[in-house]
Amino acid sequence: MKRSILLILTWLSLSFLPHAAHAQQVGAEYRLGPGDVVRISVYNNPDLTTEAQITQEGRITFPLIGQIQIGGLEKGQAEQVIARRLGEGGFVIKPQVNVLVLGFKSQQISVLGQVNRPGKYPIEQASTLADLLAIAGGISANGGDIITHITKAADGKSTKRDIDIAQALRNGEMEKNFPVVNGDIIFVPRAPLFYIYGEVNRPGAYRLEKDMTVMQALSVGGGLNPRGTQRGIRINRPVDGGKVRVLETTMSDLVQENDVIYVRESLF
Image 1 (tube, rainbow, N blue to C red):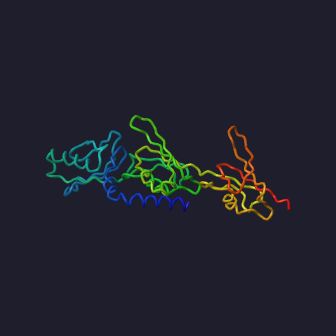
Image 2: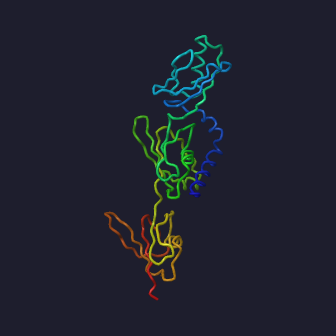
Image 3: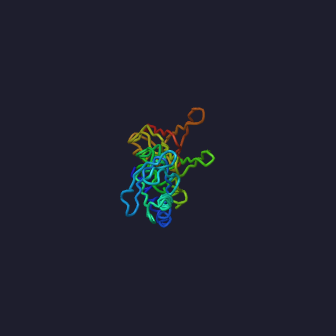
């Protein structure tokens, strides 16, 4: 778990350093929508201060001017619309309106799978893939490095892409830490596993790292016990159709997902 959290935090810091000015610029681009709760105040007119929840139609009711459409607007745009209505109605001279979002509910993203706090999370400002993973508590100890992002286009069609977080970090591929939008799904699958049994100190299931060799896999399992031998180590590898292929192997061979490594007992 520590490994995944450090990975995401590092990615976040690298993402924000070259784009600090951009982050400040897009932070106000959140568009108000149904379910959002706002507090609206007018300078020098405390009696007009109002808290309201935006309806499914994108409207709120405000003193003096009645119903007003603010759904789909950015905060600054909503302030201008309310100020214009107050001014045109002659209710307030040169009104200065402030809109504060108290509850973000209209735009949410689902973070599912092997994260520490899976669930739906609101987008409070322009957010990236790494932002949402961090909000969800980071990738859990069982999570894989390759995550899936699903988004829906304007035509209603869904598109899916897989992102290798570890590789993106190693290569500085910050373009893969892209903005996420309302309705997106982030899915973190379980990390690939391999299995080891026989004459080793810690038989069991272990996380498969990239380009892991048989020697490295044996070390993860605590190495051979006094009865084990390197001669005749076998890999039982699942193949199509539910069958298992038995392979004689060497220490430098690569281990694959779901491989079962068997260490024989020495005869001498």
